[in-house]
Structure formats: C-alpha cells, structure tokens
Image 1 (cartoon, rainbow, N blue to C red):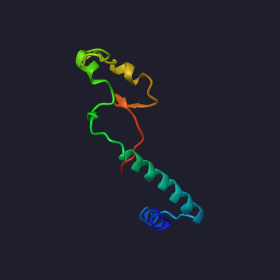
Image 2 (image 1 turned 90 degrees about the vertical axis):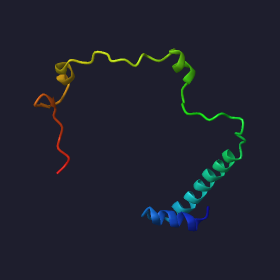
Image 3 (image 1 turned 180 degrees about the horizontal axis):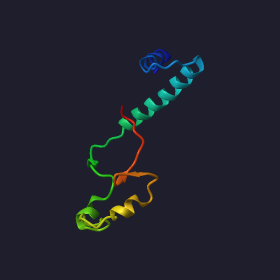
Amino acid sequence: MDRGAIRHVAELAELTLTEEEELRMTAEVGRILAYVAELDAIDTTDVPPTAHVSDVTAERSGEGWREDAPRPGLAHEDALAGAARTDEGGFAVPGFVE
C-alpha cells in the first residue's frame, strides 16, 4: 500500500490527512495487509468449516443450554417501576422523529 492509495481512500471517505497521518496510515495498513496475506497462506484444507463459535455438541446434547420454552416474565407494573417516565401505561421516551 502506497501513499497514493491512502490518499485515494481518504478522499473517498472525505477525510483530510496530514502528511504525518498519511505516512502512519501507509505503514499501519501495510502491516494489516501483510498479516492478512500471512493468514491467507495458512493451509486450511483439512479444517472443517465452523458455523458456530460455541460448542454445538453441547447444544445437541442439551448440556449448557436452557430449554427454549416460554417462562413467566415481569408483571407490567414491575417492568415500569424503574422507568424515569411513563405515559399511557408504557415507557415515555423523548421524541426523535419529526
């Protein structure tokens, strides 16, 4: 990655970088791209794809996961008890849409 590419990306992002920032970004982005290339070089042929970050075998066996079933929730009054403001039986929040 060269300074011209950094300037181009900064322009696309509508950023104004000082010369010092351009130099720093060139070095930092270069290190990031080098690390990505290093990761890309790792042979993952025999590594099975992963769809979950947690142990799915525990999910299948029922260990460590609660049953996905309806449970009693808070009473309406208890839910509103800690609200700073309420209005018409619900939470009152400042308006943000005109």
